[in-house]
Image (cartoon, rainbow, N blue to C red; front, side, top):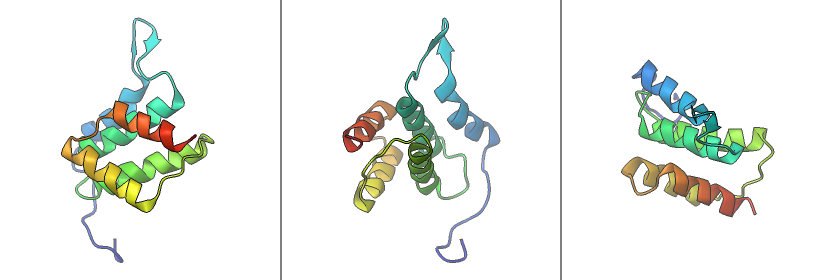
Length: 109
């Protein structure tokens, strides 16, 4: 933050918890987001769109997506422009979690 600016802090603990936990929901014993990539897309979507942080929600959401993909050995080839576009499209409502999943799968081929 010293280098790039921005504000520090969590704005809403419950929205942060929701962004992280919704990917693991089930209905009648069936996972709503059955694949690892679907869970990652839903978490990233929630972090960007729930606005749990005072600042940096798009940056945090897209960074968490990249880290989770790497930790789960999903090799996705996103350019910097792709990541910027994803963050902006999620935040503006032009992309939902299913579209993000499609993008992850497309970039991981």
